[in-house]
Amino acid sequence: MKILFLNGPNLNLLGTREPDKYGNQTLKDIENFIKDEASKLNIEIEFYQSNIEGELVNKIQEAKDTYDGIVMNPAAYTHTSVAIRDAILAVCIPTVEIHLSNIHTREEFRKISLTAPACIGQITGFGANSYKLGLIAIADYLKSI
Ligand code: DQA
Image 1 (cartoon, rainbow, N blue to C red):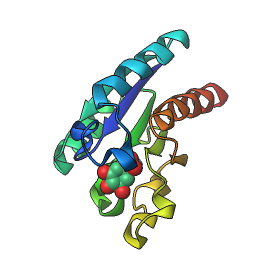
Image 2 (cartoon, rainbow, N blue to C red):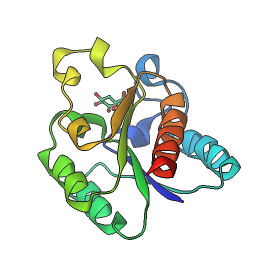
Image 3 (tube, rainbow, N blue to C red):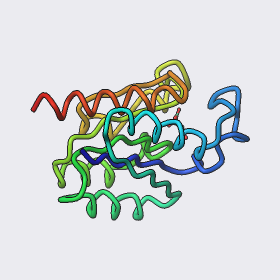
């Protein structure tokens, strides 16, 4: 099983970016944590981060025929990107949306996700564990279909 982890804008700054909201771990720390968890489950993963919407869309399009599932934290694009939503719908790859913070307890504009309706479900508010829960959720889903 091959899973793509997609990370949107400013997640490359994790570790120093608003640690009260997003924790102290860097994206590399989270990637290493998820690589360990994935190897226990015999799952192959790739981590990808971009600050550019079109690059995320390209990566989703390229994932067709290569990845069984996607776990994505679209970051700010969660709340704005019709293009990422449409890309997920176009490739028909089962996708789980994740967030470090609980977007439903924050500003009003963060409560709306344009991307979640294209996904199987959303995991939000568990810090770095949202990535692990996303991995378990996509793996269980793929085994069940
Ligand atoms: C985030 C939540 C988004 O609202 C925000 O723009 C992010 C990170 C999260 O993981 O909590 O960049 O996706």
